[in-house]
Image: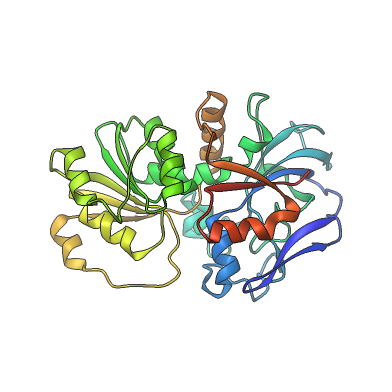
Length: 351
């Protein structure tokens, strides 16, 4: 079958690879439908050595390492069902929960946070198989069915929208909050949708890319250009001078975190939702004096996956204008486009 494989830094190849094995007990095989290109895929392509997971050494459980099939945001149709699988039938459509392994015993697993497990393995990174291929065999527990009203295109967006939903949950957002989102990429847009679902009305998005600003503004969001407009002045206008109670770093650049801290009201929270490729200095005294909270957010839970699916079924997550489709053969061109800042979200059509 055809697969998009990462061999090393800026070394991405479309290759013919063996088809996945037939599903064993508790497993299913999918015909992949659509797969999203994530910001972390761009980071893996440009700087695999800076990845929070080791791609160069075989994973102690899965054995996976480079070269690796990419793609952890994907949907598909069940093609084959293994022994002992109940409640899933050939032809069912759904989204894939990409965490393929967590130990179940460490403190993260015991607290229901499998993506923070030190042995966590994800499809498209450090577990064998990924969405940028024609087919994959997975555990039946990783398959989240979607109703007829949710397309396979939308189902491929469940994973990134669940990332954003998890960050909003981590922030403890309520209708009493005001929020600043730094970055209008897919996670920033997903955060805007999740905040609205949590009752947060006063939300400002800061985005320097004019194309992304136009796309998120067309959805109804309030957006500013931090290169030509004063973010702090805009926050002051939004909050009557108080500052926002929550800021989300969905950009992964030092300026985003700096702007987030500067915009906070006393006791405010910053959610870090985007990876940073390198460290940088911040002033801890400002955090101390403002009694701010820095909250890390990675991944999601199975329940949050299902929660996003339910919101999609209810009509949330309009993708008009910010989601594009390209073919699997166009993966390298799509990654180049996104790296250059063109477009917002690209889904690769597998079949």
